[in-house]
Length: 188
Image (cartoon, rainbow, N blue to C red; front, side, top):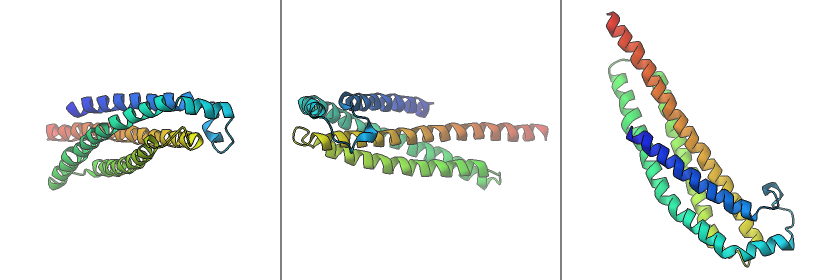
């Protein structure tokens, strides 16, 4: 129950942070993200330069808030995988139950967790570089890096959605397993 509440809180914070990044990118985005390689207009470049301090401050806050959020999420997901899924699967196997579906889901969860960590690390590195860019001197590079960070943040979100989906799938499989085996014990 606590893990579910923490997961909901994690998703809320991630969604708020994502909304801020989207707002920052939208603030700069007259040219679509796909047209990054096209030459920006002087007006667009000037807008980036004039809003540089506000953008850097916002991105700095996002970056500062992301690390504790990642740490909490990572710990929560690790606990779910290691302390719940792995232990239950081990007990079921030791008691000669067929837990192959649960083991498969746990394996997919662990792989998604590794992906989450890798993608977040890439995103964090991009954000670290981004908050140290001089957007007044290199507005086009800054714009491209914001777009890159936005795309990477979307990948982090997709991985979180995948992890949440696997937790739900595992919970449903446990309920099915429980119904099946409690029914068998009652019938005996």
